Amino acid sequence: MISIANSVLGIFLLLLSYTYIDKLEKIGCACAESNNKQFIKNFALFASIYLFVTMFIPPGSVVHLFGVTGALIYRIIDLIFYVMSFVFFVLAFMYTRNLINEKCQCSEDIRREVFYIYSIVEICLLSLGVVFGIMLSLVSGAFALALSTVDNIEKNGSRITETVRNPIKSIGKVPKNIKKMTSSLKKTLGKKK
Image (cartoon, rainbow, N blue to C red; front, side):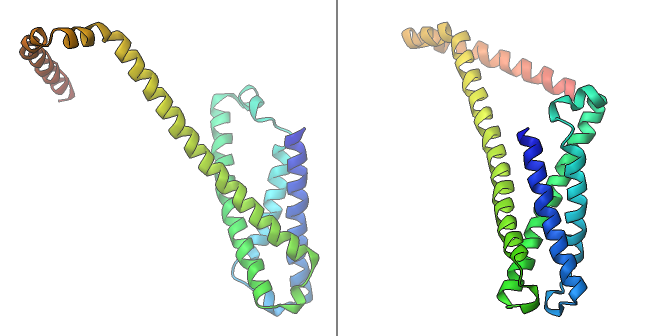
């Protein structure tokens, strides 16, 4: 339900943005002309349709509906959509900020302010999503490394204890360990060739 509510809100705001730019074109607002205006208008319409279609497909059921390959394709399309959305919101922010800074009289509308704020909020949310994703990867990687280290210490704990208690005996084992490492390295390198 939350996903559907978010999609409905997104569709509403995107269509609001679309109608705002469409209004500027119809009244012939010269100061609202921009190279990015057509992309912003077209993407707002496309994103509305995309959100409408995907809001009825829960992400968890994609594998059941389309299989593993279909789910992978769906994820790739979703990723492309998110990247394009980020570009859209950056361009929308720059476009509306320019209208405000230029004091474009014919572009004054409550939808301009809503579009401006909506762009800022979405840029922040999408950026935070990327940052949190990276942080989650780093934290999970560090956690896995810590678990691996603890596991390695548990497996080699008796050898470590022996080295601490009887260092002279351990020094005697160094040449044999070096020979094992060298032969293991030769085998590994021989397999790669």
